[in-house]
Image (cartoon, rainbow, N blue to C red; front, side, top):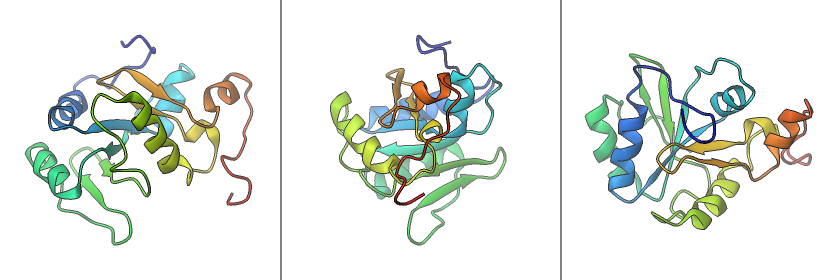
Length: 156
């Protein structure tokens, strides 16, 4: 269990994947429902991942060792691992803006990438290697208040 109260599912190799991405200068972030549910104290199973700070070729070189498919998706790259339904996405925005070891650049990049999400409680992320919760839209406070609020009312 991390200091943030989050833990990857038992038997998951996502921690190894996160460390492998970190070793080549990137950052793996668990996003969406998993983070929301774990912070709410509910069982969290639905792992969706995003990778920051690396170009697509480098991402593919790392994740090939972990059984991910070749890239799918035209507009926004996604790699899938069918054996456990794990998806790893290249964020819509900000993917290359994060620099290894620079939490501020990750926060800025994640804010840009999470802007497309629907609700603030679904727009949080967790970087397991650094054990940092990314919450640019106030999702944690909304979760505690049991409030649903759009990330961007103009696009929701």
